[in-house]
Image (cartoon, rainbow, N blue to C red; front, side, top):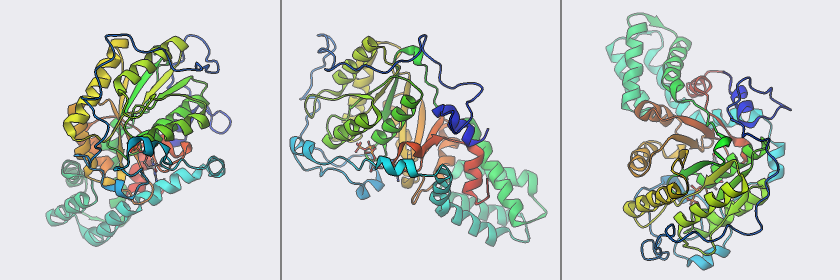
Amino acid sequence: MALRDLWGKLTGRASDIPPPSTPEIVPPPEPPAEPTPPAELPPPTPEPVREPPPQEIPPEPVREPEIPNPARAELPVAPVAEPLETAFEAPPAAVPDEAAEEDAPKAGFFARLKAGLSRSTAKLTDAIGSVFLKRKLDDAALEELEEMLIGADLGVAAAGRIVEGFRRTKFGREVTDEEVKTALADEIAAILAPVARPLTIHAGHAPHVVLVVGVNGTGKTTTIAKLAEQYRAQGLKVWMVAGDTFRAAAVEQLQIWGERTGAHVVAPAKMGADAAGLAFDGLKGAKEAGIDVLLVDTAGRLHNKTALMEELRKVVRVLKRGDDAVPHTTLLVLDATTGQNAVSQVKVFKEMVDITGLVVTKLDGSAKGGVVVALAQEFGLPVHAVGVGEKAADMRPFEARDFARSLVGLEG
Ligand SMILES: Nc1nc2c(ncn2[C@@H]2O[C@H](COP(=O)(O)OP(=O)(O)OP(=O)(O)O)[C@@H](O)[C@H]2O)c(=O)[nH]1
């Protein structure tokens, strides 16, 4: 299925893309109406739900995370040494200009994906040129192919699988540049196809709860905003929980997105507030208000891995007190520019919570797009969507064939 069809499916924007024959969104029993968020946050959490707080997760010392996001240094964040109250006044991470979004041509998504993948593509195509041109795919050539795939971030396992595929089908005869690229794209697409699965929201859960986790700076808050905008455009009632209660800029960023998308934001009364209690309040309020989708942001940086694990597990535990079936989806957001570091992040977060799917961001810019293949091969987790920019329209369902062909430098 073409990426445009999948996009139409996700957004339901019938004006420019024909509607899908099988909608991914399972509608609620009643037609969605405009959300009517309460003027105030839901009432305080009942006694047993409020978990004791500040000592467990003290707000002050926000240090470097144990799971680093190498790309984070380049990103605009509030200075970590700043007191949280002061930081709350600080401007949030850049929220892109809405007007610019409307001007963005639809083709922009593919152009940016291609441009973002160009670094990986260049590595692959250069090597294809030098290794294979007018040469038989003998053992030495296949070994070089394997090295080149690993160098382009595809990972050892995927590289081995691809080389085996080549050995079976092309070994022993002369091949052209185009043939190698096409065969490579086919092998890559075969690895990606099983994980290219759009996120299905069951609005009948009322709400379908999506917990969003990941290292700070990978794009969690932006991804939540993008999802909120897309679901709102489909007429679904959406709430967002600003669960990164330690980073004032993250809360403010979500509030700006809330104003923009019209999705109500459940925000902490003060910085460092108990995130689990806030998520519970959000769930309770969303149930009462008949909300379709509840998107829960979380902290990506705490003092260390153990603290982060405790925080995330507590959020899940406390949410389950409100409804044993939630979260229905736990999304791990990964930054494609971090390459193999994304693989480590999946391993770490899988130990913490039950990850149900991935969103890979920043496939524009200087992405190491090959890592998506490594992720697919190693974990088999659904890749629900990919991001190529900061605006809502810059996130789309992941499409295996288009991605594979872009990665090796072939036209769609
Ligand atoms: N180029 C590009 N930038 C992105 C993309 N997704 C997010 N960003 C930017 O990356 C930066 C960090 O994004 P956030 O959404 O704040 O990341 P986060 O994971 O919520 O970070 P914390 O709030 O620190 O935990 C922001 O400047 C975003 O605009 C993307 O797909 N492409």
